[in-house]
Image (cartoon, rainbow, N blue to C red; front, side, top):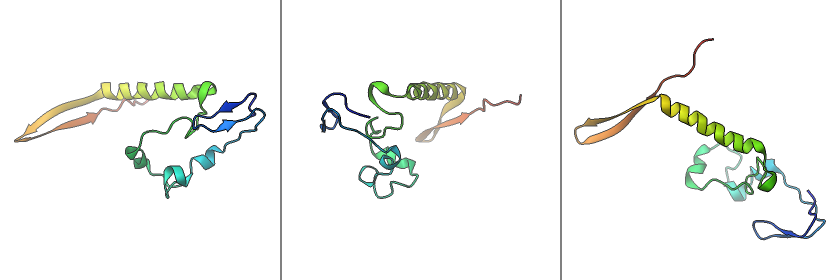
Length: 113
């Protein structure tokens, strides 16, 4: 992208007019400074210890006013799937002496066509 006017990035970096700005999403997703020494490893539990990254920090759907429309679709689709799974789940609270806990099961929504 080329800056058509002077601008400032969200982190405070000044970008003068005419500057060519490029970023490599593949490299950003494997940045050791952001994700740790095991940045190339598939380790989903890394998200349990930190807030989700911003669209500017992890721009798989781009960011800002030109963000990919698929990002909003993905979010609404995930919410819809979660609602359907929760609606089909059967939960009950069982007491065993002084201990209690949730027991949950999901019924399959699949069928042969």
